[in-house]
Amino acid sequence: MFNYNFRWAQALNSLPRMLEGALVTLEVALLSMVIGIAIAILLTLFRLSGSRILGAIAATWVEIARNTPALFQIYMVHFGLGGFGIHLSPYLSLLIGIAFNNAGYLSENFRGALKGIPDTQTRSARSLGMTPLQAFRHVVMPQMLRISFLPMTNQMVWAILMTSLGTVVAMNTDLYGVTSDLNARTFRTFELFAIAAVIFYLITKTVTLSARLLAARLFRY
Amino acid sequence: MIEIENVRKSFGALEVLKGIDLTVAKGEVLTVIGGSGSGKSTLLTCINGLEPIDQGRILVDGTEVHAKSTNLNQLRRRIGIVFQQYNAFPHLTVLENVMLAQRKVLGRPKAEAEAEAVRQLNHVGLGDKLKVYPSRLSGGQQQRMAIARALAMSPDYMLFDEVTSALDPQLVGEVLDTLRLLASEGMTMICVTHEMKFAREVSDRVAFFHQGVMAEIAPPAQLFEAPQNADLRKFLAATH
Image 1: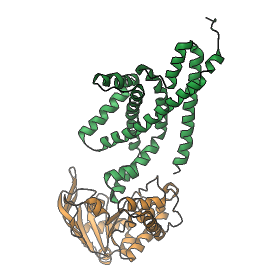
Image 2 (image 1 turned 180 degrees about the horizontal axis):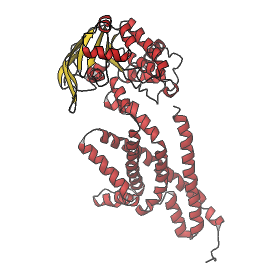
Image 3 (image 1 turned 180 degrees about the vertical axis):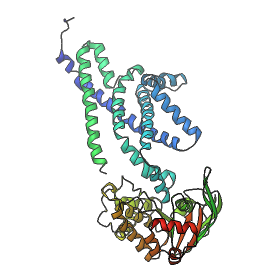
Image 4 (image 1 turned 90 degrees about the horizontal axis):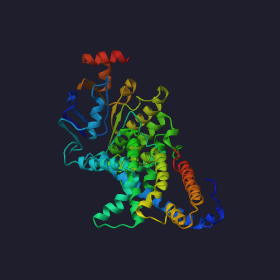
């Protein structure tokens, strides 16, 4: 079992290609967060609307996103929708699948955050003549996003790691996809995946650290 | 003018307002006293339409508050309310707190909203706290900020719901001084309060609420010196 010869130099030659893949991974994760947050805010509004139908849509979304494997969700976007004649590229399928998952988890985080904001905040805003939507947008939402900031950072890390699931829809331009392709050609499995793991680690660490710095700047109150 | 006509209101089986009739004239300062659960705070939140009523009607300058056709968001611009809990918006500075509704509800340009906010904050003695977040303010300062926030909307009426009840005793004075100032400037005010000395000083009339009924209403000298109602006599004896 010890007759494996490490060839780090050869594997490291692939580093530039892997870093390009890392950029794609970061891009997909960032976009999926932007879309996920926007949808999660919408789902939160659905829940607050008092409408049964909108509430049920939000609840169903959250239930599916949180209680089925992310891998199935991505697979369904690509091949499930494909069955209806909607053919999306691997990139789009991965992006939408992760955004779907993000929205479900974040909406649940937002719901928890709302419990920490007293009703009297809305009451005060309404007393000043704000509409329900204005009260949410200008008074409740900023506080909700602040309380949810740490869970949002966690979800961003999770989104970065989830990009590796793109393999089920034949995504080959992200970090995992690039690494996997290189491996198929060179069989430097240990070296390549070790390097990829280090890159994943560095990306997520950078994200968490920048989030901490961003929080210090954003939340001065 | 605020006209309250035979207003009834229940929370479930509990009837908190049992047919209130009351008229507050422009420029009048009315204070409302009474034990907890007497319905006095509920009445205030009915006046600005935060609470629905079961019967009767409330007219503000002739507009029926609870009519379906009434735009409450528009009506509330004219009625300022300050609560026992100051409800500062924690994510905004003092200045931004006072500017927000001016910008979003009245649509005032930024410069104008800022000028008005600064004016009102100076008015309540917070001119040196503009860039500070509410968490850095004392309870009394936060309450004065809430008053400035309501005043910045240029309301015709101000409702005060036990605004000193949540404050430390040494901070009550500064908030009452702000209310006295407003009263002296001719603001139409309804103050629900437990501060008898204040009620006696600033009011044109004092109303005593007891178990959902307005048991007595009279100018302060008369109400405090010669109370007619037996429950009022008991209440005054207990609070002195």
